[in-house]
Length: 387
Image (cartoon, rainbow, N blue to C red; front, side):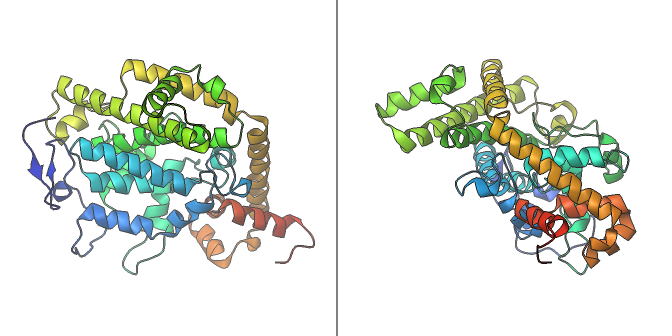
């Protein structure tokens, strides 16, 4: 992993290609330092933000009212952060930066999961577009109102760039032209810490969607056992514990899935760093695309699992029914506010005058929780609903 290590302001020994807080590019607006390092401050600002709290009532796969057990955007985000921190620590990278990026990576998501994003993307195609990485950046740079000295949260360059370049199977950055406006070099690879968040997001997606799908009985263990990755996890659990059943068995299988993927990422990433002779952050920027990843065998097994989930969980008739219904909610809310902007709260009427009507309405709708969107729908379209 590299013999020479430096120490960040935390005092922790880091790999030479880790992103040091002391070498960061700083913030957009002057900000007085305190006892925390810059990435710790970013983490705290994100956790205390309104957008972060709203993730509790935003859909992951199952809408909130389906049950208290299922993952929300908030629990998913916390699980991503936990996996990412573990990988970052093992690779001697900047754990504070990794955690901050992980906690911020879904701040731009809409209510009702990807179906909400799909509808807003269509509705905004002639008005500047919609892409959740950019929306998350817009949230932390402008929409959050917490400080008298500057708009947004005034996060560090490294956290903001990592949000913009977040990239997974489900979260591919859209139009990259806006990167130049933020001084993000489109030719520069994301920091290793940012790439760890990307792969942790993918690990959390698959393993926890398996868990939720089994709990909802939309998935069957016998069908999953035909997949190489799930079969390996199943064999690992049976080897360690023998015959166990019920909820404990399910939890241990999910735990084994995560473990198999994380161990593979650690080994493969170390190999790629060595093979590419990456010895500092500049090497990462120039030659670090995909430096964090799975081995070919594990990547193939993961793809097989992802395709199974796409066919059997995300396309399940009950999931699709809710997604289509949610799309109608979002579309009708958006069109109602555009046609009669006076229905917007006063602060968003003022916001729309600054940024344009469609963008203002988009920001209002994108920031809603599932529950708030449903309540607003009733107020707009149910004649006997109280205002």
